Length: 542
Image (cartoon, rainbow, N blue to C red; front, side, top):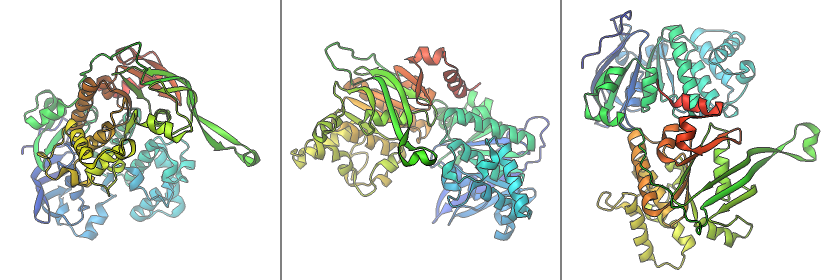
């Protein structure tokens, strides 16, 4: 495939020139003879859904994919990376080509401080003495915007926030001033404002150092904001590439057009408000606090309290969706736990006109009224249970006398309601979660919640782990179910576009406080609070 001409002022000689790249596992080809190039100082985004071959393509360049059969050419500075020995490649990895991995919590070693991990790179690659390497590690953390860099250098990964861990990963990757940076979904797990900060940071560092960046992502907003050129992959094939503005304005391939058209769409009906019906959820002056240890001797005699939710007021009508947005640590998930009766709270909190108590029988009856769908279906579905048992588990609790035949029929109907049938998936009921895609697993999780016929669903980031096209399908499913059943949703997310599509009203939370609330069009269209303005601005692509 012909490489799009580069911007004026850039060298026509590519820094990386990949030709006829093929990757196979056990004889099965997953990347099909693709060509692309990156110029010095250029930012190329490699986009596509999960399973399209993006990450395998990028990691194959450094032969970091286990048991892969790799052929073709990857010319970097006149050398073919695919023909170099392991010893020669070790001299390039980290020095000339560095990698930022998707999840820093798993990429960073939990047994060493982040400063030690950065210093180790400098000792091994540049031969610095230990003290000099640690001083340089602190400087690198400072350059990536980590506050109190000397103190943070002594912290372990679990002691840093998600954004700080990602900045530490970037500092480690840039330690040896690489010519090319491979960034594999570097902002996927971050809040919208942190995502914008990391993008701006990478852009600034790229301009300062002149390095090239290969960004692997399925986030098209990120591509618009960051990249010079884009290459689109589908099922291991490179189907389209070119300047970002040109590809997004006039996509030539149907798959590219589908990705661009995957922005969440609003398709809501008005709530079914009736004065005689109890509200599915109502809260007044809701307060949730965690006990914490007081510092010093005082901690021996009494506990302190961290207030995670401060005097929140809200309600949800039948058939209505309340979106709750805010960054990590804002109190969103604590609010959800209190709603589910899993966290003690103060103030007024009623679910379908009842309050959580200490009587397990009373609470069990209430739990049928409110169900939850979690963020990551892979971790929320038991890997040891088949689909029939997962979806039908709620019936064993709430309708234990139901005959097995009737229970199976209810399970099949719940799965059909979310678009999964035996005709589509032979042996569906006896399959395990790992045999399904992420979107299919989330549909199973929704079926599990719906089978007991709740009035209220708590949706905790239900689409954040999904590709854009799958996200759109799941949101459309939730909208259809709400129209058909009059369901109410408490929708927790940090994605402003999802809130615009899904919610009637919205709460904006910061540090446990509701800083702004009201109809979605009003709050997100003309935000009054500075924090809301910042969230909306971070989600807006110029």
